[in-house]
Image 1 (cartoon, rainbow, N blue to C red):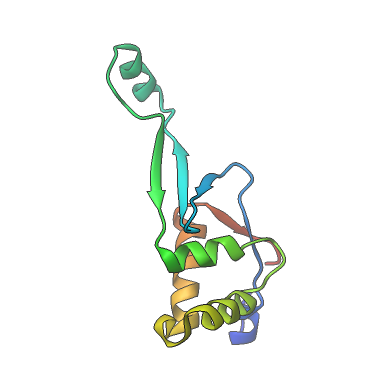
Image 2: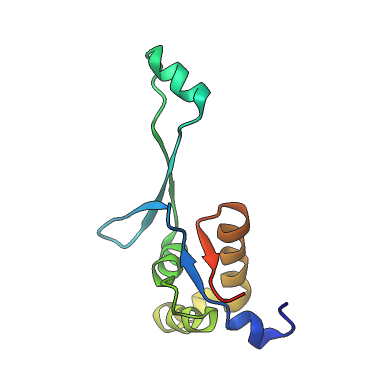
Length: 116
């Protein structure tokens, strides 16, 4: 269990094995989620134009954080990199990072904790 701020800042995440994503020339990450529900496949057979992937593009800050997730860097390390690159624009720094990481972990399952 996470008991204090140091515990929270020492969490290490890694990108889920089955996640597909693209990175463009501006380092913007686009998450690709396969749309393979049986109903979608049925309508594709009937020649409906249903995309095979749902594309979700992250913003500049989210992309920067996502690209730092490597299974080795802690939340604190990622925050330091983000602050060095963007300065005051990313404050309140750790509140924003933790909210984002929690969302893409718990709700989207794009990442997973490696050490808790």
